[in-house]
Length: 409
Image (cartoon, rainbow, N blue to C red; front, side):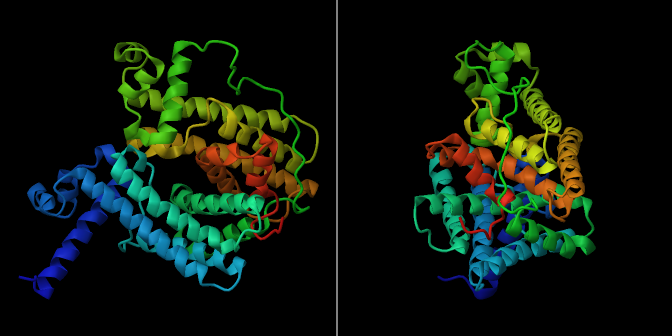
């Protein structure tokens, strides 16, 4: 017998409330700390009631991710209907900002960080990643049909960077009132469309001498360095939950006891990975500050070096995929340091205004686009590997910053 309409409606509403509560918890505490009991408590139910809709936690997590991707795909489709590329980019940004505005004001809104997808079972993972790739294809379609492989690679990079910028928004937009969102949105679109330098398309980075931020392939790493390298790569690829102590130890062919000899807990290792990554990023920034040339040349040289690390170094910089799993106090410290590095990028841009090498953009917004572009670059490693010359991969990817998404190449 078919369910009555009111019963079906109540079922759907209750299920939606559970998915929404799980989404909020995942964003605040990560997948590991999100339990069916906590989800039930958040909406005034008992755990048994939640298991009626989702017998297992992983089923609930998959539903949260699936609905997030579906919402992003809906936004992409709506933006794709606009008649020009600039309007499509602006609409895509506007829809994301409007959602964050509604969430900040207390309305329901589902948008969960997707960092733990690769920690799920392969079948669940494959289904979600297929849906995600379809959404990416819709965003790539903003730019039209590519004429050749080079243009296809360029459009893929632009789509990736645009999506990463939207996913990064909640990390830094908390510093702004919702009253400022329209202005920030306009500045964000302007930077994405037209880039940073006064001379559009200028890209003449200077090679930076290694200041202990590159990985030496000629010497055997110390065991703690080996742990940091293995953990960073595994967290970048599998997320926090997928980078288990067992997997990290197996990757290095050592025992769990050896792991705990160096680290009291996995979270200690994750925090050290963040600290090491931020130390390396900071060293590159300061090395770029000391070279000759305009401030855009200095910034371009820094970005060039950091992309080399993300694309080709055996120890890349840690993505923010592990951020959700950290405790609140540690998370605040990590985000604070990230913001300090972003402000240093903003300082380069401000000095670039003075020497005429950077056009009049909002340096605080631009610095966060730089951070999201660097953060998401690890995901583009396979994309970069298709280029014959490493420098060409870096220049193509960073052309979003050097010339903007509207430029024809």
